[in-house]
Amino acid sequence: MLMALGEAFVFSIGTLAYDELQRRASWRHATSPRVGARDATQFVGIGEETISLPGTVYDEIADGRVSIEVLRAMADKGDPWALVDGNGRVYGAFGITTIDDRWSDFLPDGTPLKIGFTVNLLRVDAEARG
Image (cartoon, rainbow, N blue to C red; front, side, top):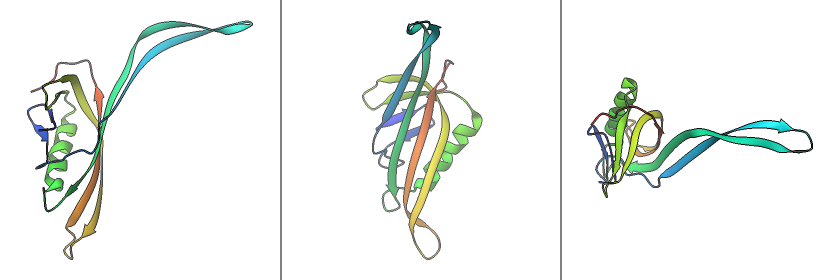
């Protein structure tokens, strides 16, 4: 297991194995202009935290279409999900904000042999499910 999003979805070789994890966190600072000097700043709180999981899945290894549809159903609910990696590290509660998938290398019946994907998550201040 690479990572689990709640109890509903596990990122792994058999489902969707992401190629990298991109994590972005921000902190908010308010500014006030001053004459003849830099703006005054004040820390006003924690900003957004996002995680992006891009990857590629091949039909010989897993049916990426099924896994992507499971994630889309989770996103449709709008619920926060606990995000935990394979070492047991808890990242917090995250909601799915976007899912991009790119199909290529098709069989004659239209089945893609290769699916590139990106799952974007947003940390939310809510109690996570599962």
